[in-house]
Image 1 (cartoon, chains in turn purple, brown):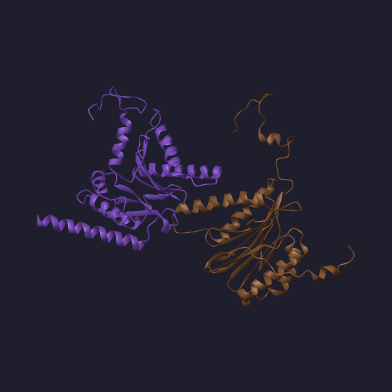
Image 2 (cartoon, each protein chain N blue to C red):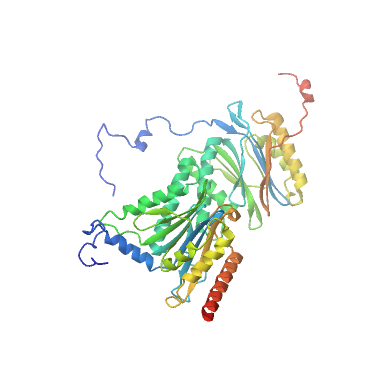
Length: 253
Length: 245
């Protein structure tokens, strides 16, 4: 960032001379400091996975969830500030509820992504507010099947087959690009998601972490829910095994 | 402190001011209505029945109404009275169910909670002099305990082993007193169905706002089960002996 300290980064309502809004870019930095979050949309479902970095051994296992449900058929995973995330999740719930109370139908993925996009974008316009320090992954099911969107601090939202945010996003993206989305089933995607999170995890930086996995598929009756413990255990086993295999291959070389 | 507001004659009046002289905004009569619900406790849980009719006055207007519904995972709700008020309430129930699901804490709304919520809504609305024109029967199993409760448009609530609404209070309740009360734990499902059919048959003969297509539902430890519509065997040969009308 060449123009740091030139005075154009004090307010979100000021452009720099080369057409950037630094506050939004800083918000992106906040996202990049967070544990990795990924989403995979396959033919028969969506999977969300998060590398939940634990700052203390004293934390109760499975507490402080980073993947949340917003209106039964929507799952929200995020990378960035958890406090901002909770606010956005509340907004997703309110929008889903509002849509349902008007149309008596579940809000489609496209609509919830757009409404959330508009909301987040509004926080890039005024000097009195700060943009959200989160990239939000929205997993959803509507009449067109399973859907996955990612929403940036700028308010930009894009639909994906697979996406990643947070610390390990480069590694994760490289791994996601290798997947065959035409063939992958949701059961396999859960394992792959676990493997990718474990691959993207940097042991040198953060020792303690917990894998969080959720899905929307026929097995959950197309509702968003965390994967059952046995599926999670299996996925973790798969991830650890494939990491060991990689290490062995490295040793041989 | 209240903000100081300027009231000019041409400004739009606030709703509470309109209420004193404007049009009536509350329900003064129900329109499409459902008739009796009959329910009681038996050995395995709760059993309930209601027909599928939505009457428009005396006209048998809607003949495929679903008046027994599942709320959450383990509660059964039966309704009589205004069907649109019922649909409104269903939206509210869906809202709290969704809210509960979003909490993601492996807890679901218990029957007692649903019942309490319903009674609060009904009593609250009657205190606004704008009641929901219904009588509800809530049934379920809560921590192994059978729960069967009633709440009506006045906010009256009570729990009992046998519950009925509307005409059922006059025609079915005496049968339930005789056959169910004091022996709920001995009644098998087979007998419960037979008792329920007897009640519904009497109602069918005597209540002019019912017809012969009804559903039965039960809540057991296994969960809620609502039957497909079925009909009762009737015998109208006695009709020719009726004189005096």
